[in-house]
Image (cartoon, rainbow, N blue to C red; front, side, top):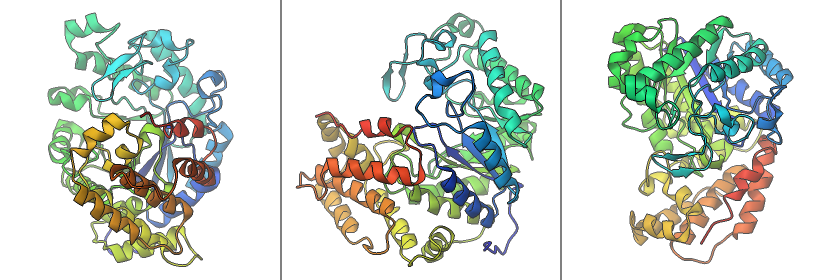
Length: 465
């Protein structure tokens, strides 16, 4: 049953990007259920964000034990999408976020910083994450494209290119000193774009680095598609869309808000709604032709899968510039994802999605309770300075009154993980022990996701005191 919108969509391209590289690789059955819902919501593009989770035949070192997508599975999903009017766009990050490759001795010689780096937010990283911009790196990326791309009918390719944290801090330091980081970045990305063109693909890429130098945006090839990402209620979409549009990309760029549910157990639904609406409004105003909702899995992908569902529906309504209240949102969740089951999951997810807003964010895009759950004792003490016992007690009361019946057990797990974090903050006897929550997390993970990567996500439950 398709959702009947009163107004036409404001964007030609309407997509979802799902992170399959931060431990959680979805089962085929869950992917197909998601694609069915996207079709009913009038999405027409789908991407699987990939760093190392495609089973490249010559690179088992990178994906061993991670349960990657195989070529056969990609072709099956491509066909499944096509039959529902959805374009499955190939996706392979090609510059930064390559730590899953560069941690291995075989690939580390291609790194910008051979011995790891200092991340400006999270501190010391043992493994490098950014490719050194060189012919060797380009040859490696070309090899990946050669094997990956024939499995997709789409003539688009998202090449990534975001957050090359180490650029200029290692082997390219002299070059960066001579001409500047952004010129070095642009040189390398132009070479990546040429690789995409060589393979008959039009490149999409993340625009965050080039937007640090608006004066350089006009130097981008007009054949590529910038994708402007921002995940908070006050993300600078207005300024950035204007910059890209006036540089000659009107009708050829995307806005990419976030689902807001990563680094959370319930989904920061208030932030997601505001962020999605802002992206849709400014993207339409400045003539973006694409809208790409992003669903990430940073730091272990601990959020329950159902926390993505409200944002998918909210984005569909924003794309059509139509209002959506919580009652209708809950009804759509139940009808699209829990058909044939008693109503209640939609209401629970909408209410759970409001919990994070009751406490301050320690920093975007994070929820207080997710941070508190995994914090060391010392870090928890610092977090507690951001709030009060009264606010925590009020939040715990809100958790207690969430609907207890007809709830997906994975959603219930999200409720209980939040409850445990609150009880830890308030120094209360936990309702559910950590070992019990860990066991339930593993059990629920395997309902929609493959086992590969689960072990790494479970390691976070071994909290240091």
